[in-house]
Image (cartoon, rainbow, N blue to C red):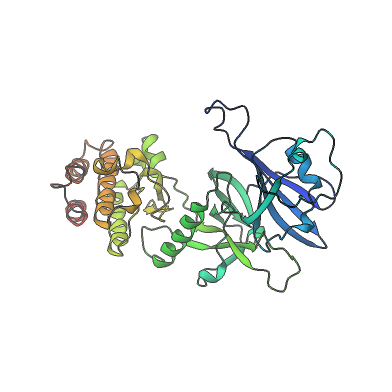
Amino acid sequence: MPASASKSTGPGLEYKSYCEDIDFKAEGKQEPNSRSQTVVYHRHNRKWADKIKTRRRNEFQDFITILDFQSQALLDNTVTELILEESTKATAAIKVHDDPENTNRVMEFKNLQVSLREDPLRVIYPPTCQFPTFRTIRLAELVQEYEIADGVFRVLHKGNDKSYVLKMVNRPSYQPLDSDVIRQELENLEQFKSIAGIVQPAGAAVLPNPYMTDPQSSDPQIVISGILLEYYSGGTLQHVLKERRVREFCWEQWAVQIGNALDTIHWEKKTLMDLKPSNVVLDEQGNAVLIDISGIGGVTYEWRAPEIQDEISPFDLPFQARRWNDVWAYGAIIKQLASQVEDCPFGRTLKMVADHLTKDIHTKWTLSEAISQLEASVS
C-alpha cells in the first residue's frame, strides 16, 4: 500500500507531501499561483496534520520550520489548512519561534496573515459505524502482493493465507470524490451480497484514524481505509478477449450471466455506467462476475452509448438514460465476444442480439428481451 513520503525537519515537525500549482507556465507566469506543504506537528505526544498554503515561494519550506504552530488554533482529529496571504489590512504579526535567515523573503511581507480551515482536499475515511454489517480486518493484517491498478491491490491475509483484492481510500491520485465512490460501493456491495454474478465483499480494511490528535485517546476512531473484495482467479474478460482465449472456457454462459447480474442491479434502480470487459472477471469455475459496482466511479468514453458520449455529467442523467447506457455497453461486450466465435450457431446468435442492443435507442431491444433470446438459444 502506498505511503506518503516524509522527512524530519527537526523536533516537533515532519514534512509530508509538497505540491504546487502547475498552470502558471501556461499562463506565462514565472511563479506558481500557490504552493502547499503538508506537515505533521508534534507536541506533548499529540500531533496535528497541517497543510500550509501560500501564494509566494520565497523560502517557503524554511519559513515553515520557524512558524510557531503552538500559537495557532489547530483543529483536532483532521487536517488543518493554514493559508498564508499578504493582506492590505493591518494584522498582528505571525508568530515564529526563531529568527529567520536574512535571505528569507517571506518575512519581508509585513502584513502576512494566516487563516485556518479544515482542508477540503484531505483524505476522507468513512467511519466503520456506517457499515456495521461488514467484517472488519486490520490493514496491518494484509500483505501487498502486487498493484492491479491505481489504489487497487492484490493482498494476502496473514491469518488465513488467502488472497483478496483491496481497493484503498487513500491513493496517489486521491480526490475527495474517491471517498464517495468507496462509500457508494460499500452500500451496493451490502445490498447485493450473495447475488450470483456480482462481486462479493470479504470485509472492510480498517485502521485508527490517521489524523487522530491524541493517539492515546480512549476513542481510537476506527475508520475504513479500503474495501476487501473476493479475488477471482480467472482474470478479466478483457484479457481473455485480448489473448483470444475465449474457447478455452465455457463462454456460452457469459452473456446470460452478465445480463442477469445487470438486470438485478437495474431492478434496484441502480446502474453501473462503466460496464466494459475489464470490469468483468471470471471465477475459478469460469463464471462471469461484475466488479466495480459503485455506479459513480467513472465512465470510459469508448464504452458510453452514442447518445451520451457528449454528456458532461452522465451520472446526473435520469435513471432511464443511464440504464440504456448500460444496455448499450452490454451489447458492445457481447459483440466483442461474438467476433471470436462467429463460426458457430450460438456465436451468430450473440452477434444478432448484440446488433439489436446497440441500435438506435428508439429501436433497440430491452435487456429482458436480450436475455430471453440468449437463454432460449443456449439451452
